[in-house]
Length: 457
Image (cartoon, rainbow, N blue to C red; front, side, top):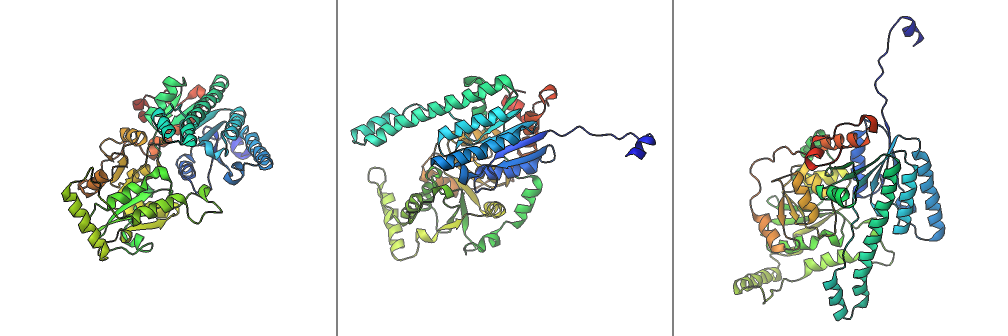
């Protein structure tokens, strides 16, 4: 170096990369960890980046001694955050603690420690009104616990929303704060209802073009043959995700009763580890799904015509002689590693996500299906309808729980032409994160996708 200086050679040094800390689950079996891993690959070359993996076993302990140890562990993380220029929190309250009190306390510590902060909301807290019709229905049925649970849930969401955004407003008065949402609806809520500025929105995105090309090359029936032997002429319907009641998988099982015998339903996923119980021989939702598969279809005389009765009797006779059993056409494929999960999705003829409405604003499975070019059928929830605003004419919808409509959608012909290039991908996600984490004095222009959605620079 000294010799170069003496020789009059000037070295051109590029701008110093900003130090970014990402606080998130990482080495866990969950959707947020999967997104964070993809995010690191997408923006890893743009920042001096370090991920602080949140130890879920420790943070979700509930006894007093373990909570004190978890608090000390989290404070150690906060002490390290002062070494960085900016901190990004991938926020899902359950990852910070088992109780809302623990989660909010640790959120406050993180906000105080971060020199500058961005928060990616995987669930945006909202005040939920009391479901009074359900409350009075439970009262009339003499179910007081269920009745007052309606009030308790509303109070819980009110308290969570007020305290969360109260903490963030105090941060915004003292330091840089940027918020990232997954839907235009969530961005507008945080801007107009909660009063924040500098909000970006972008759907989840995981796979870069090279990833998609690699996965599509591996996809096919032979990739699934190692998991389950299937007929060569089988039409494969895939549903994906942890086995949880809000996923609505029973809707897809009911739809199978109205589909030809060459249609097979493949369930990719398992019970979430947080749902394991020492005294359970089987998870309740797994038991519910198995019961749905075994249940004989009986017609409802209030709704079904004699013609439907005839078809039902014919179906029951077929089952009786063993010619067509639903259990032979529904296959539990288990929980797979990320790459195998992607290959399995690309190998299905149709991807179905029959979720219930629980306020969820994003779905990793839906975003992956779009990126992989799969035909995708979604229940008409707020979150999925918002996803369609990013991908117009790309998704097909059916009403929540309507298995007859779902069966008709599956039978209908899929797209003949390949899907056109999509406006949101890992490249636009990278631009959003670059804009959100650039220094305030020379902040990047807001990326085109965020401008169209109305985000603030």
